[in-house]
Length: 276
Ligand SMILES: Nc1ncnc2c1ncn2[C@@H]1O[C@H](COP(=O)(O)OP(=O)(O)OP(=O)(O)O)[C@@H](O)[C@H]1O
Ligand SMILES: [Mg+2]
Image (cartoon, rainbow, N blue to C red):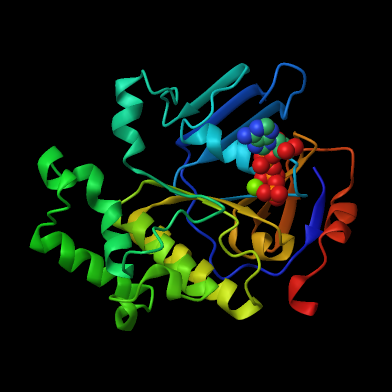
């Protein structure tokens, strides 16, 4: 186990021993010829912040899609809260409502308002008729407004989503996910391309929600420095393989998996974005 000195992060979450995600020797493929993910092993503790970092095309989004049942492995085992993510598995289908997934594209409805986009997060818990006609009970409206206040968008409730800035769109996507009252948040590069300050504002929102709701946040990042600041564990994916997993313990970074590259080499691959 390698140890590297590191400043203690401000948002270090409590670690519980219960595993919320487990993967054992997982392989995936989009076609019959190539594997996208190759032999992934990982386990994620409930209530922690787990970051996935890697170059474009390395398989990060694919890894997230395995966790919400959008993809099934060609080989190996995936468990989400001890259930197999499979649409034929009734227990997983119920659980899916508690997985807040923010895709890389954010998935906002452009021509409806910010408030309406956030209310989409409440749809799974409404009855079929209420859901079809989008009849939201007063308490759901109040909840959506409360969450919009939390993410600092109270003044933009009635604005159409396409009129927002990049950072504001990300806040709406987070608010929609919070509206689901999730136990797991899967966020695919929601702070990439944002400036240093806005990225941290958004990460702080998620860190606060983690403390309040014992949320497990699994987040794909491009920025290794930011990942290390907020995550309990950072997995590095390269060409579909998990080549490294590092975690912050006290004021040190602990290397939990020896890969092809040293931790120092990995850090050099991901320069501090704030200094660019
Ligand atoms: N629907 C698809 N059909 C075929 N190949 C796909 C599909 N989605 C992704 N791939 C391929 O699988 C590989 C991994 O893609 P993935 O989207 O997981 O990468 P990523 O690490 O998220 O990249 P980025 O940082 O650019 O978002 C890439 O080579 C990509 O071209
Ligand atoms: Mg991706």
